[in-house]
Image 1 (cartoon, one colour):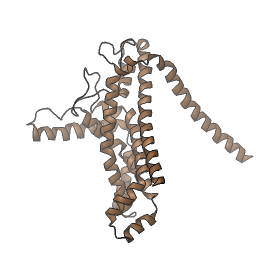
Image 2 (tube, one colour):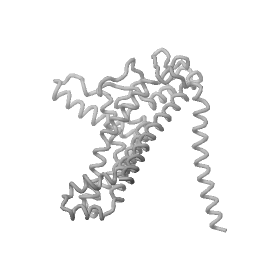
Image 3 (tube, helix red, strand yellow):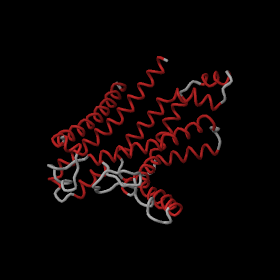
Image 4 (cartoon, one colour):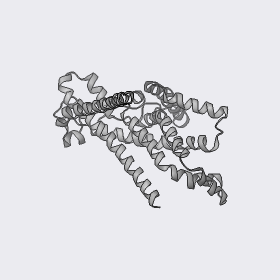
Length: 298
């Protein structure tokens, strides 16, 4: 009897969670699908920012994709290298290793708004100001909100996700493969590079997918480090500011002079943001599946 009640309770909780997801998605699709059109997806003008008839979100899509790409290029190498050190080189009971793991766990629990303030103070003011003083005689080039600083901030925020996912993938590689490689005369570095990392690659991609999923929708870290209210052009350099779908949703929901008139644009922008995030994740999943298939048949 108790087992049945427990099964019923857990099943009911699962159904409730799944139902809420479908309710949220259904609400967004119901109110936003009417706004989707070729002009809305591929257009975007200042005059029509709050006008459902002329609004477009292509600059926001472009900025979101550019942010995710630069963030991924920054976080994956650092996260994978850190995971390799912790799993392959560091002693598990060493005080240094414990400090590193504690720092990673604490980093994962820091609120996203704190990362935004950190990015403003460290990347924009300290690093950007240092580069301007060193190479440009103090002229303003890097000491300002920019795509590169927003991407670096997002990379720091998603770093624990990549480290944990990669480390778990490395732990799943059989110890016998390492021992066999070393027995055949390979060095430890060669073993890691040619045996361990290829075997753990699907797990590494999983970490990248999780990082992309979180990075594509975060707004607080980029508000101070690169996102712009409106730009009349697409960013052409990593020192330019950019528009972002999540920040655009924030602007529409807080700065609109007529919220009822803006609701279709708001729902349409949210729907596009969900679609972009889904497609980015889908691309990662397909790449991971292809790699696993090659490894299985290789």
